[in-house]
Length: 508
Ligand code: FAD
Ligand code: SF4
Image (cartoon, rainbow, N blue to C red; front, side, top):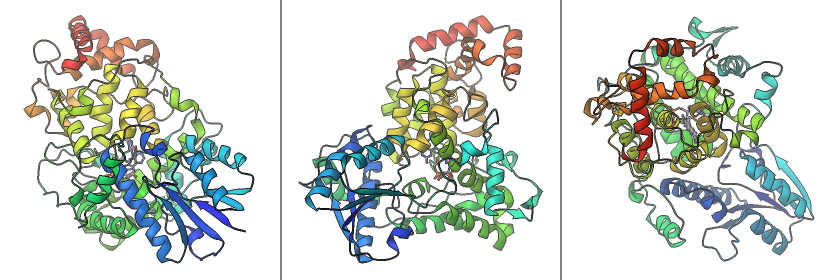
């Protein structure tokens, strides 16, 4: 039976069982569509990375002897919408079966089910063979329990996959080395230069521009830093393991104005597009530790593995457990618009200027910048989580809703009221100063709470807690904040300062 098999842009898993054997009746279908480039305004590097990776994947499929229908963004048969294009191709090519890989996004899941109903042929969905847990794992794991807790899920994943284990016990005697991963970066070790992939994406960039896809951010197409094929992804992985992993844990939470990437892997795009499998990344990191414990050390490797085996799988499980309600949660009823400096970096707050500036330049910021600078500020300022989500979903090369929204609306904005995390991630300048070099050259004074040039974070922090007293006071992890607040002599002045900042957010 002539079969069409759909492959979405984030399903580039060469090791999927679909591709092992050539099947003459199967045609693979891939498309670059406006539906996907336009649901939010994406960073130009994100559009380039996806299109280039998809094109490379289609080439690879053909080299393996598979038949492929690939519809570039400017192809005349391309209807620019998933539904219209699939219906058109299936009809005109007289396919008798339609098969697809289960998407990671709720919206596409619903859309594909609808498409299947419209097609009057046999349809079937397949697992992407990428994740280490299935859509329901997290929900099942925590069924009957009051809260989700990443740490307990992570420990069970360590046991299930026998990662960093000595028999039944965690290797090294401890499950978690978070305490050792809190160093500031003082340029003690130089950050090695990025590996160059040596190809030119100027032609593809022209195509994207000609199609008038609206994008944000900048790009150097001759020196495009994101891996766009399985080979390039493996190169980046090997580079990370050799050069960066030995310092990963130590500087995991550090931020530095001159080092946008520090010792982070930048593997999120390769992972989220499925060019790399999470288990291969985890096992290779574990092998490094086993082969050369002096070079690597438990704190470095455990810190890295926890992100992928723990956080990444956990977030996906929460997504499927809580969608679609999750996407409209707004626990604090925040309603403000995102200030315009989120789109141009034009602010006197040095931490935000750097975190936003590098996001526009590189389509990248690492976790602590996303959580404790931009996310922290958005939460303290009371920005509508819809606005915050749209920004994160557009600007980062790795942003796909299942992992973006759980991190943004959940972990960072606490708009879920405590599903992902147990308390809001907010801080004053103190934390930002402890982990970065931003404050030392800032227009604002990190130590001042009130008066001229007082750091906005310092008053907004207390005002956030005061404003949300009813919702947070009884949280056992937060009680201490209200104790401090009640004893604070300057309280009224601080709240007034915050109020004046909130009134002129645009000018900060
Ligand atoms: P590394 O620091 O090298 O970590 C290794 C890998 O661990 C990452 O590639 C990623 O796959 C995984 N990982 C680490 N932290 C998380 C996490 N919290 N959740 C899931 N996976 C994690 N990650 C995305 O992949 N897409 C997003 O859209 C996204 N949006 C985020 C929004 C906010 C507000 C926050 C706070 C975090 C977000 N993250 C997102 C998680 C994390 O910040 C990125 O995965 C990470 O910065 C990617 O850079 P890296 O590959 O260098 O990561
Ligand atoms: Fe950011 Fe305040 Fe530090 Fe300036 S002083 S960099 S605004 S935390």
